[in-house]
Picture (cartoon, rainbow, N blue to C red):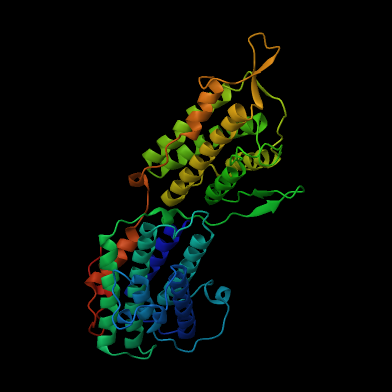
Length: 434
């Protein structure tokens, strides 16, 4: 599951917590799960590079502006949440296991999915905080979660499980979070962090190389990114022979045949996920790799490049297709898979084109198929095929598939929730958000 999938699951669990009846048993377990949820939110705030109050301008320390200091404002609300004494248990002891109380099970799911979402962001190869648009997307998700936690705390206080706070305290906290949420709605956001994928299991070969293993369909985006890193082109200034970083026809043939088989299955997954644009992108690569493979019929290398890690990684992905072909990855996983597959195509095109024209290690037989000659024309079939792969366009922003159904449901339900409900008047008695 990607960050977006985990965040969707966390918001769905929060919505069930707000609509559930007050728990009567397992209160220590509930409070322990609530504490883990608070810790996960604190980790997310820290990952967004929060500045401490002493580092802010003197004027900003009095009243924080949501447009300039949104994360700091959320951190202030997070800091005022009650922190009762809870059992000192490991996360694995409280986040997994059956429970009879719906509210407790909901809190377990909230803490578990928020923690996993943080891990996906932290281990994503592409920096999730690289641009402001990505940061604002993550801040919007964080604001929704913080407001839901404030409302959940109010319900727990009414049930007698938390120390009560004044009515104005809840109102002020929700107003502060609402200001941040409103500012994020005015910003241009980049939903690409929703496609942050977790690490896949890896194994180290006898030669010291790393191979990403496939144990489920969600491991393919990480494995494709690892293959793209192995195929990255060597700088033109590095003319030394390197059998690890330089690649030749053996790697090209393995990647061409393997990516054709992968693209076929990826297109089937996209069809089942009702993502026709992604399915079309996967199938377009079949034609590109088929032309790339046909263009290698009369080619040979002066110095053959073994490329053992590339061949092993590509072989691992193809071999595991039989086990996972009938699975159905989520739309967010498929979007991450498309981005990783695009990176493979670009890198293999750049790397092999450089070996052909710059280093002239890949050459072509003449018409008599007796002597080799360098490829010097950019109209040569192999060079054209490499250029087609290297110049493959990235996915358009409007094609990014990011499911926000549960996040939107939670935001709508919170908008219908008054700040000081009467006893017994909970979200479960309100109309559905959608």
